[in-house]
Amino acid sequence: MARRTSVVSSPLKLPKAPDEYSERDQDHTRRLIELALIAYTQQLAGVIKDVATQNVFGKDFPPVSPIHGQVSSLGDVGGTPAYARLLNPSDSGKLVVIYELWCSQEGNANQQIRIRTTDVPATLGGVTTTAVLAHRNELDVTAITSTLQGCTIVAPNPPFATTDASFWENALSWNQPSALPPNRIIWPGHHPIILLPGQALEVTEPLTGAAVRISMYVCFDELPLAATIGTDLPLDTTAPISSCWSSIRQAGSVNDGGFIQFFNPGPTYAKVTGLYVITDAVNVTSVRRTAEPINVVGAGATVSISVSKRMNRGSIEPIYALLKSTNLTSNANDFATVTDQGASFWRDKGRAQTQGLPYTAIVGPYSFPIIVKPNSAIEISVAGAGVGLTTGVLVMWDEVETI
Image (tube, rainbow, N blue to C red):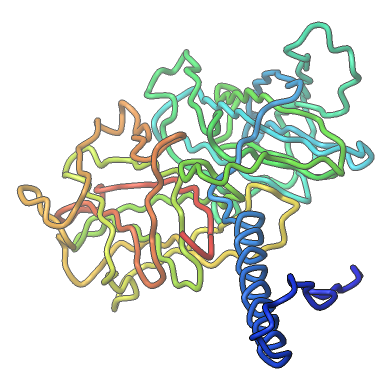
């Protein structure tokens, strides 16, 4: 512990006062000056403390010597889906920091890409494909310990459900059966995915068959376990800090269109740095922020709550915000209709499902975030009613005490 020192260690030595000043007056003057100096010193210390501990509104995550690679894999006609993963081996002694993740799938619009981070990776089997990993800097010859692999037979089957997926959505391939156009999920400007030893980033989809292929491209660093990840940007409110991520998809019912709600119960502020919305192909999809969220727990409604995870898998901080959805609210049009945008700040209509349902970026890297205070929400609604009226969302956010 640092030794405590007094602010004024000895009485001030003032110039000799004129004869008309009594010793009592001199002592009184000296004491007034001492008190003034103490108050000034305390104020100065407070300013220094405020500068030293100012709020970190964002962080930069510059790559060091990134590694990249791509793997693709088929499913198996015997009944297992295609599967791919980036594994940080348990004995690596390193952090894996993933700056870019691209995924793609082959086939029809009913396929569904699922992505998760996990402490318990699935087991590879069948035909296993191992990707070639290389440093982008050819001069870097440091050994690479991570493995990027895919397989045709995975255990368990399926390797994980949507209830454990941080991202899941249909039709990333835009109905191009013989093509694998890549889709960016994580890219520079987002908070990176950080894996501890023994953890993995996994990609799969629920359909089976040798004709069903998925692809996964990653760009990442391997850094020492004790490395400091991220550089503080005290004045940059657009950058992430320690982000969470979650995704959900919701179909409508005969009484209502799909409805999704990102709700912040507090006590922190939710700083939304990524908001990617799937728009319905038939009716208009609208998005709003509101201090009076709709109650999604209605009679006869099917309510789903998505899993939320820290993108840094080493973080043990709690997550407060909830991403939930329902096929029925008290009002089929919720807060906007086909012809009236109501309180929405964004609305659009997508393509037919056979042409894919790509995400639309409302808030992306380097955009100013949407701030959601406690007990407020971002809501996404498809106007009208219909079983096929579907919407989806991927949300990335920080939870901060001050704005």
